[in-house]
Length: 451
Image (tube, rainbow, N blue to C red; front, side, top):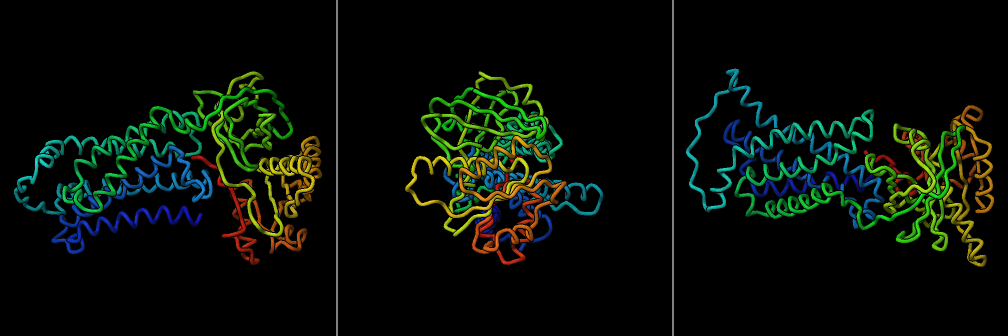
């Protein structure tokens, strides 16, 4: 999360510094309305910066994924940028509108406006003619953005509605680009701030078109067919095996993919629960009934159904040089560890002379218990040489840091890989940090939430 924080605040501070360099007189405003003019510009510049970056991240660019630590972290940044855009746009709107209300109520006196100086060039004159239109477009775009971002942030709103409406933010963004081009002070365009804004607005507009024309991830999509389905009513989990005869580039255990089985529903992210062998070209996905979409999957999916797979994404890939590892899978969070165990077992069969990976302890904590699923898990752990600890919550209680430390005396030398409920992960991370684990370096957690 450190890099996400740096990216978010670093972008705002950098653009804020460029604005200050372009408008140093804002530090000594000559009265309230001069201050208001500066704050309208600053809040507007920062709001369009957040929205531009959020739109760019929405295209799932490949190049910053490794730096961010995975697409899941980039989507957390996308969420922060969306909230930042909403807050800053709200401040921008208030700085613009609230003084007008105060004047009407007699709390402020509107200053006499000096005549506008003649424009320096034809472009400035042209932009002035569009000022009223840009103000109206910006106001209505702000109202639309508030509504659409609220739909994205409220989890109780069905994913299907979110998927269908969230793309409209690209239209809103293009409208706000027009608003910014016309209403940013002309002097800014001749400064480093202007160069930064041109890059952001051009890049953001391109990204908006990618979103509108449904080209996000187009170069990473592969056609597949559902080959096998198995539903476990005890765990309310469906396992699907998808045949991808060509185009899949391969993946590492722990990575995930976006799967589209219904164009109206859109793509959903699922961790890949299988190792990759090009000769077999099959992917396994294990999905639990957690929301409105996943609850419909047992009835909606069928053998032979075509699907689209996009990926792979993520860097929850077990790559480190620690002398041992501790894995914690809470509930359906066991999925990436199944894939990793299958990969280790496959490597042991194919390369028996290769040195083994570091010792691993896998803790699987689950509230729902299936003998069949646990039997398969035990077999996978045995084949991979992984020491398995299964905890059934009603019987054993919830897994704690104390239990891990008791079972793994060498825990201080280990890296911890966690996948499961976010609250569970946060509590475990805090516990281990209090006992001396360098969590910033050794605690790995996937933030598996795309909205």
